[in-house]
Length: 295
Image 1 (spheres, helix red, strand yellow):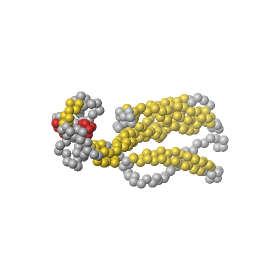
Image 2 (image 1 turned 30 degrees about the vertical axis):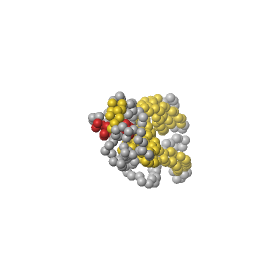
Image 3 (image 1 turned 90 degrees about the horizontal axis):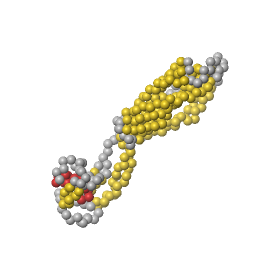
Image 4 (image 1 turned 120 degrees about the vertical axis):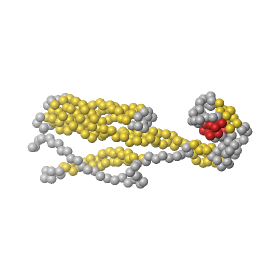
């Protein structure tokens, strides 16, 4: 019937390939896209069709989860070594988590003349993220744009309604220092009208990529320096200071963690207390080529 407003829905499949050398099935893929340059035009009355040309801009990052051993510090009890320590910023504990959030709300239309729903566009925006151990707390707004028709279906108007929401997402590896990237996509929507009230049912798919940034030392330019014989003693008495570890103490006096722990009867080398008195022996059993590394 002429003069009436009609709504048409159609799914248009899109398929494409991005060539990335070395990608495997076990890698994590982070994809962002933007719809650009949309052109819609009719084919005419005889063909009863609509042409849709869409350009999609893609951004893709691929991550592999691997455990690697990196030497961050080293020394030789028998030789005086010098080297450079460079700081490298790395991403650790990366995890991708998908959660479905169900929003069920009643909203009200403000014009009785325009009381027929032609279409609804849903868009979710995350405004705040709060991370704690194992949990990410989100708050945001679900923006609903209603296209409404009058009783004769000859004219239309737009009404925007905002529905606030909040929810938690469980992510095992996150903590307060984690970095969170989140994409929210409506996957289901249903709107049932009763007079001027509308029951809105919207499901949101929440795709979260979480990771931590960690600075690590990378060693290069290792060289042997001239020997320093300024400490002729075979044993030193040392009192533990804040921030000390057996590794730092052993490196300072060119001893070994094993020797310090043995002579001081320390069962757990990682557990020393500030003010504790330690006997630090020189490493008498070290060969001329022995080095100690901290990975």
